[in-house]
Length: 268
Image (cartoon, rainbow, N blue to C red; front, top):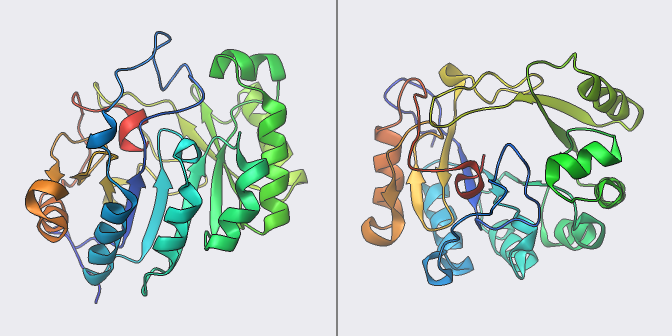
């Protein structure tokens, strides 16, 4: 049965962060000196995540996206995908990844039940890519994109972070790359959680508060009604159903700011 928030928005989407760890250090996401990582015992187990998803389906949520950090650094992530894919009522199961490990994991993920992927790619310039990611190898990402295409993880969407607009040189090149390779390119302006700076995703509906249909589960089990909101409800303390319902009932009409979280541990 469809579930609606107090502003009559149909909430059917849960973004699940499975780790706060990442194999890159993108300049707009992580500080150069690194981050204070969650303790392993604080991160939800696969069984806990699967139970939250099962409860969410019972509340009318049928769309799930796995995020991080970088979800492919989570050990045995393919097993989690298989567990989630087995839940009756899961209509859409996707993942956002930087693509570095997709060459090896694209086919196993597809076989486990993953439907599609969003892959981060902000530039096609190898040197600039290395600079933005603080050491990342763009060739690994390009091989990962090819592996995702071969595995049938469609539609493949490219997330391109831009400084101001999609007419920047790097963005134009990424857009052309997408056209030539039958990839859907989405442009995301750089955001700031603390000051509440965000905008609607070009080529998608993220950032459009009036149409927002999502809740978020952090790697340590906090259900958040909004990326740009400081409210959160613990599935371990309250139970999955109560945490999800509380977040749904507290979902704000518009995002404001968030000084308690970061992109790498909420899921971006």
